[in-house]
Length: 459
Ligand code: F0G
Image (cartoon, rainbow, N blue to C red; front, side):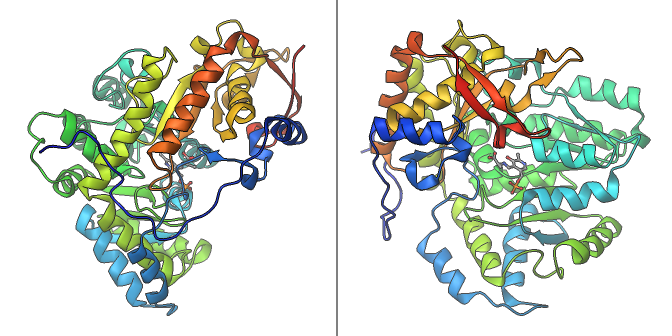
């Protein structure tokens, strides 16, 4: 038989209890947190969907790897296992460990960035953008048009607009573009995948102008699985081979191992260019550590190596992608507006359509985030005008392009009944949406205000 029920492809060996609180308790806790769930103590959260980064459950083999870690300062055997595991997927000549994704970005852009330089991407993740802008360079998003329409379904809404890229290169000059990036999957655009065809076409444009192509590869395995499901010609290919083909078009990659390497900390830089690799290693020694450990312990390298083997397992990926899709489809069936189709690692609620009566100035996404916690102890994150809003010279809010609430699903952590509970909570909040209030900010930091801002409900 071909079973209809997709089960978690693991047994649970070790458990971490979660704490139940009452609505009255959560009302107090949220008020004390200034209505900003970032300020909650995590043990007062029942289902924590703040991020899928560093929140994976490690396997028994990864924990065994932790014990096997070789902590030699130089030439650790754990490094060579890590290097071989990354090389198997990327086939890149130079593999440089870092303590997480943004450390890889910091090193790369410190070397190739600077004033007058431009970096195109389908959509830069915030830390990538920040690391580019910090050097004085410009970060540009060239996402395909369909990727900007949350209610429309398409297979590859994370694709680069290749024509725009071509025009962009002509306008800025290839000599001012040290590299081009593709973020797979596109986190900031809803966790939407990039097709193999698009990776290939992006590479052709880059090659014509002699511009290296780098992948922001955090969620490469989820992207590869979407290619298998949705792109003609890949339905019978093993995911590992699909991933290898994706990397074959790239000249380098940055990676946060906290996502698709199934670990709690780690990352790397990979590339073929020998001279660039030498510069990166030299900077790595100043900022992260010796090139055979980066900012990591030997045991962390073991866990990454093992995680990279496990993440391309197709039973795992089927469970992963299907459980996010299950959540998304149940919400769509109940009329809850989300970015469609569901992404790889998260569901993004469209707060503009969820709360059409609450204007951007009153932060509809924040209102939903607060209510999800009050209703069911669920923690998500606002990705809208709290996170990306700016002020004009008269102090008036310039809203973000979209008002979203991200519910990111940690890997291998929650079971189907957790997801069913989550669906109940979201639908309940949706039913009561007319009772939700807007929020005003009572304190904000000059930069990255969403982490520490304090709010009050209006009225
Ligand atoms: N690139 C992408 C696409 C990411 O999603 C992240 C992190 C990074 C780079 C940076 O990696 O955190 O290891 O330094 N995303 C997390 C998130 C934080 O919640 O989406 P890092």
